[in-house]
Image (cartoon, rainbow, N blue to C red; front, side, top):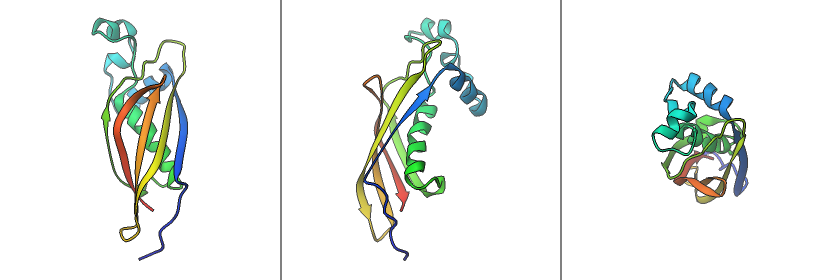
Length: 136
């Protein structure tokens, strides 16, 4: 077995999102649900405003994990989360999603680390029970 690569114990990044980014994500992912682009529609179904895609939010968290393991997404072995809140993106504004993580477990024998990740927007939790297992 190769020696375990050591990464910093904590990771943190702020990821910005605005309406053009949501449109680009919708085009790339094929998720054209109007709650992510049309504020009138979003409000008609009870939302405060347009919201970011849940998968975009999870991807923002995993982008931080990818940076943590040296830019190699192949080192992410698994991830899981619960969507606990919404990232509301008003027209003409840029909203910050703050992603922070901590190494909760290092398994030297398996060569893995388990990261606990939090994602908040405006001080409100948007991902819960979020973790990733990475090959160290």
